[in-house]
Image 1 (spheres, rainbow, N blue to C red):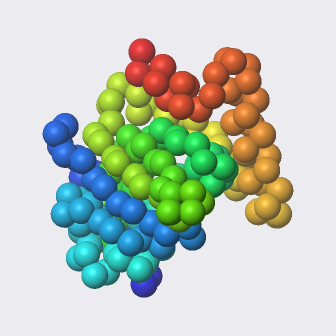
Image 2: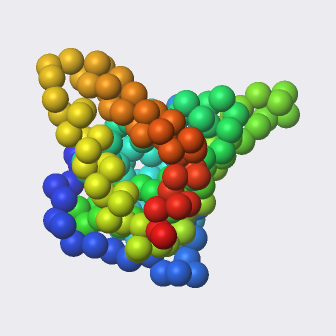
Length: 174
């Protein structure tokens, strides 16, 4: 499926709405709720079996997903602001809580994500951070090195504040 071009039109998740999805260990969608389908403008059968990156907006820095995958694959939860891309090319911001899911053998067998509406006061700081990270990722000819540089920049920013990303995003709204 071809990724849509961003329209710069925003869709807004209601304050009482929750987007829910589940994926397997590789990030392929195994479950979506009706709110996810409606906001993302996809039918359930278009999403189930697709990689979760189907909704990845090009404004999202790779370093944030790198951090997310590091945390959840190690068995930790993560909270993150994420800008997603709807099927129409519209975007929508979510405050995501992603956790690993475990099988009967105790091993991670997938991931679960609940996404809520964002604190709009936090978006200017989040957008500035993400713009900086994308700028680092766009520099140079080696995408792998650019990702490492962006991830290091994020790690240093957090270390300088003596907080983890989850704590950082909790503080940016003021």
